[in-house]
Image (cartoon, each protein chain N blue to C red):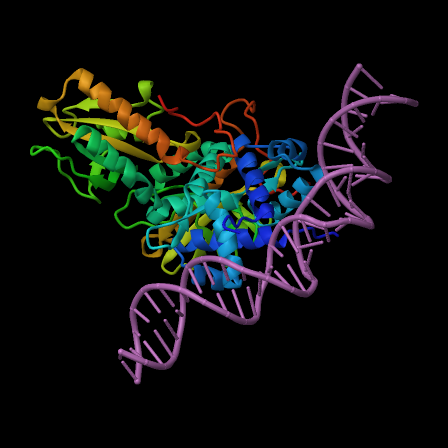
Length: 229
Length: 229
DNA sequence: CAGTGGATTTCACTTATTGAAACTCTCTTT
DNA sequence: AAAGAGAGTTTCAATAAGTGAAATCCACTG
């Protein structure tokens, strides 16, 4: 019984994810998405509805419920890493004018933007907190999955997203990488030298992130991987 | 079978709510909170863990997972905030006769009106959804950028727009301000006392926005700012 | 070192979940 | 206008799946 899992719950969570991912889904679409029979999907969605995790609008379409928003906001509030990273993101934007992100590995071989700060250029990269990003062929993925990069940062030009160059550095307190700090720039605007300049900035901020601005008295969140070491 | 509900799923969701509400819980605490046997709680938490809804830190303590943050952010972004706010805006207009707005922070020091409801007075403030508003020297800006205001709301008379008084309150589930609810009144029509009256109304609606009916099974976490006055 | 409390596993019991099928509605097509 | 297609909903018998008490292990603590 190594893999204890509750099928019912898993299915319900898949449905919840489908509804939240799509923004709105009909019963039939949700059932298809989760690969369930209509009756099962209906029952599970009703349970989710009864607990406020989804709601039905006037047309009967399923939408994310306020409970999701509520829990998400609470979870964000408890994320100490986010608040620690905010000043760093702000500095990066100030120094580069480009959008800056904090991301962490998610559970399914992807990453998630946990915090962001938009750049100041009229043409800038734009994304959102909560967005999933692949780890393959991305700068963020390289620093999250690989070892410490040479020079302290990774540059990926036109990786998964066309026309943008991403510069990422690992946040690795005690040698374990728990997050990535990155700056994303429209490729036409950046030279190799410029990428290097930004790289050093990102690497410096990433290194300082959990070293603590004060005298190391700052509580270190060592819990982001979920993988006991 | 009018009330079709899935006990397993309900229990799992209660556990999820408990973990998110507390920020971190041990297995035993979670089981107690959800009134479950340890073995059942363990099984359900494992399922939640496997899907990224909770995670265990190095000490083995359960914490909200990234999936929660992700879905919450998606839900927020997907204009569900707007539909959640619509009834509140309507009530505000009904009670005050003045125009009411929902706004969120946009980028570089601005905000955007996400939803609005025009007042009923012949002379009223008029704006439009999608309009950008500065965050400096505005009531909306004060609640979006500053901490929780004393009394739960902010009044700004003749700020950026001449001749109008704005009353705003933060929507802050879990202590994180994600939006502002505001009422804008022609200044000639409002007294200090009137502004206070409207202020309490706005603050109450803002606080209730994401506190919502929820499950009823989960106690309201103590870190929700802006308690209903 | 005995004792307490948490985490984990096992297992027999049976409860609660399942999905095909039937039925109703509402559009769309012919 | 009748026939058809597809969504939402309900029913119900089969049984797969969840349950929790008890046993085990482990880390502390008095």
